[in-house]
Length: 314
Image 1 (cartoon, rainbow, N blue to C red):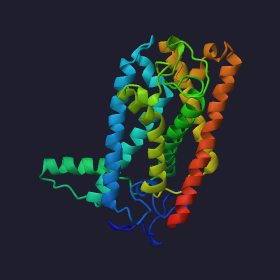
Image 2 (image 1 turned 180 degrees about the horizontal axis):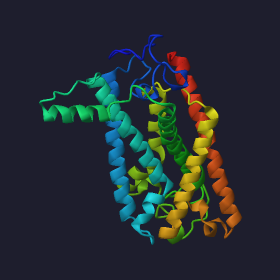
Image 3 (image 1 turned 30 degrees about the horizontal axis):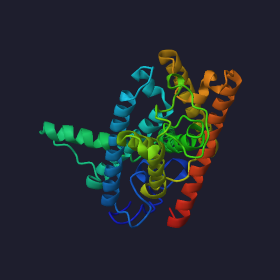
Image 4 (image 1 turned 120 degrees about the vertical axis):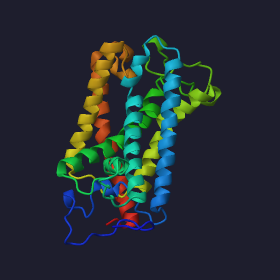
């Protein structure tokens, strides 16, 4: 176990091992930082601040996307990759915030008083929000994939935005010294903008949304993996690579549903009309999107290796 000021300690050899031969279940590792400077209460405070901040980003970004000019309906928003990425990341932080809070302030589940209904209800919610102490191989893999996708997607979202969307004129603001061809906003998945304005010349709410959806969320993902949990490298690696490919494929299918429902692609390069009326180019771009996911996963693995080496994670 671990105290309020120390990372996870090795369990007794008599205690059952977690899946993948780990000394602790992945759900418990999500509630402990490997850095001795980050105790449990500090970790909970950090998680609370991040989750609250992401909640504000979700609210402000939704308000901005609904109010900006676009010929498509507001139902396009759930199908945009930036929205999916943000919501998956927010879900992960909600789960880990609840687990960390219960694990920190109520580390052992109290037995309910049979004569007290409120005590019984409280014990039920305590068990519901507590990190499972024992997880099956399937449960381990499911949470590991949530952990993986909720970090791979924000990084992939940021990389695509700054390396593809912005240079091609779909970033929502004027980029100095980067010539591009700007498509009509009615068919674009980019943010509507004045071509004469730079990022910090736009409205505050727009600059806030752009910086947070496509940059700050990626920084939060880095902080989470490097500092806020002691989850080991994902195993099996092949299973997680396949999982990231499946997650990317599921998004492409979701984007296809969005196209049928709203006549709007969640990523501009999936639209053949914006790819020079070339279906082949759109298919190739979709293939590139799929291949980028496991590449970003490799970066995540490397970051975990670095963290384990620096903290000597057990």
